[in-house]
Length: 364
Image (cartoon, rainbow, N blue to C red; front, side, top):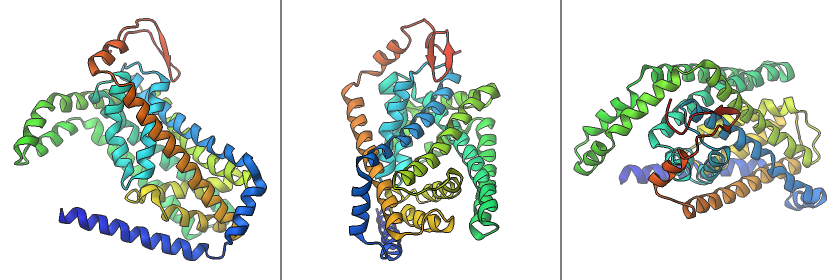
């Protein structure tokens, strides 16, 4: 309890510091001028929520292609709704990314009858590919940044981060391919002297072993299949830059996509590192204010503040959409046996994220 309380206080302290620094940088903006800008741009600003739809779809498509590699037929809509529903937890809670990943196996079992072991293995491989594609995304942005603003602390940090992420993804892939990761984790947790926890683990031992089996299967799958998933995930990163670029254009800022790519890749990394804050509150906003000036995208304080507010408004929209999705998933809930039986009922070919499967729901 004491450690939890310290963690909570540390989170609040960091949040307050970030917000104070952000407020200090944003004090030059005039709220009346920001509101006037929103009014002048009009209802067209509502279109700013659409690009993030592509981010969610591409991310879900990458995950869905991994499930198809395991021989599990899951419709694009089911995977997309699970991904969108967990976005609410990801964006609204401290360490929301952890909570979102934890609930995905349960939601996909409820929605499509996919066994938790298969979902867990696919999510692990998805994270490896996400880190790998993010390293490529940041590396490309770093090279562009060197051309635009020359060698600076931002460009060198960006390039160094890309190399670090590449090494991290390689290490994670080697660990995953070695196998027995979940089994080792099971043995470690099983030593904890808590009878209730030990009894629960004994019931779940088979799931741990199956997760290792599926993880190894994914690692040894045809590289073409993994490449398809990686391309989807790389597309999701590119769409994040597209999201910010369109928001700037809607606000009347004539920025090029490559300029936005340079700073958005860095913001994505900073946002990931600030996972302990809900929505990286304060940290993300401060990063945008800094990078928009650094990369000569916008200098007017009112435009900068309008952009930050617009980004947060879109997040609120997708958080609300995600919670609606969670409610819909719970209302349509059926028992796991019914869902699994339904997923294996059809034997006809079915297309899912661009891959055709002629088998039934059985594993290959």
